[in-house]
Length: 83
Ligand SMILES: [Ca+2]
Image (spheres, rainbow, N blue to C red):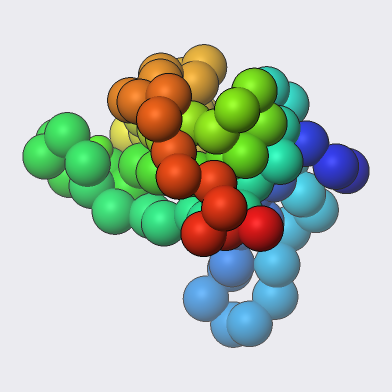
């Protein structure tokens, strides 16, 4: 679905779950990266969106595979690079 970030879980055998929408506010995402951004051992999601004049945001993993609402990092994304 446009404007969303959807999670698909791999079962370790190459099969993926049905998609679970973890953000419907990210907008027009052009780049997405996963890593442990806050050092708590859980993989979080960083994204760059060109929606609302561009911004960086991240979604914190609570350790159970659930993600927080978008936490905005910056609103000065040079979005011409991502179009
Ligand atoms: Ca984390």
